[in-house]
Amino acid sequence: MSGRSDGSKRPYDLLRRIIGPLAAPVYGAVVARRNRRFDRGVGVKRVPVPVVSVGNLTVGGTGKTPFVMWLCRNLIARGVKPAIAMRGYKAERSGGRSDEAEEYRAALQGVPVIVNPDRHAGIAAFLADGNTAHVVVLDDGFQHRQLHRDLDIVLIDARAGTPDDRLLPWGDLREPVAGLKRAGAVVITHADDAVGADRTQHAVTPLLGPGVPLLRAEHRWSGMSVTDGASETTWRVEWLKGKRVAALCGVARPESFLKMLRATGCDIVASVQLRDHQPVDAATAGSLATAAKRERAQIVVTTAKDFARMGQVPGAWKGLAVARPRLELVVAPSEPLIERVLAASGGVGPVGPAR
Image 1: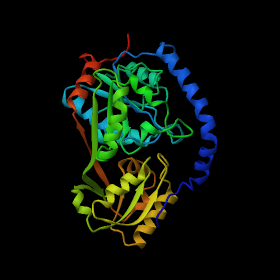
Image 2: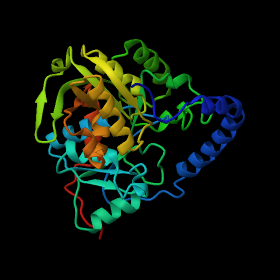
Image 3: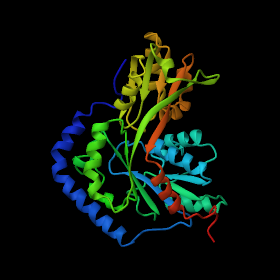
């Protein structure tokens, strides 16, 4: 069993090629008008706590979730208390659950996660309930300009060819690359693709303001968290070598996950690729579990995000061990960025309810 469960993308790609060249200029005009309004401060709301946004220029994944985790851990290590605010993609359709929010809560125990499509209202309610934070990290906030932020960190995937991309719906750009002029820091993610990272850096450097740090981040698997339903253990990545595995991933760029999985030396005998944020329903989980057992797979390997969704279909995994990699982000040089974030935090103590 191998393949996607979201249907063929060919009709969508054909529609994009036909409509894209006509619709992209209209979309660009709307985005430009919207940004001019926000540049004037129209419709921008503030909260009584510093806000640091982590976002990107494109639809699809750039590595925001692991970067937000990396940033929060670095802030905590320096005595700064963060909270995370996010839209919670499709949470309103799944009983308030958000796979990314659950992933944050599991990885960053004690860090508040505020889920509300209206980020301003969510943060205000959080503070009004007597909670405190030194700084709010805004997940996927570069285009969410209704909320004032003290620093914008923009992530660009080295593999995506972003500087040469087109606006939606012709391409994947949410706004022109020139929007980087608002960035207070830029991080090129998946910089283990050295050629793509060099090309991206060369293209975006002239667009950045004076002194804006430009960093690179590499993604590595530092270990595997393995659960068999009764207990959980941690193993080295080398543990997968030679094992027959079934793979499940519902991320924006599944090819990256599968490439890293193959690099461990395992044998992928069954796989399912879902759309980003697509629910792991009982039918999908059961189908993969059946295929895994039929192909004598020794383990199911999935992403932390997908694992967070599996609690809804635990029965399908009975008798199978499930592993998800622990992702380690190596950011260099990290200090200029951390210094900017600390400066944006203002050196204030925890901010509580608004007065």
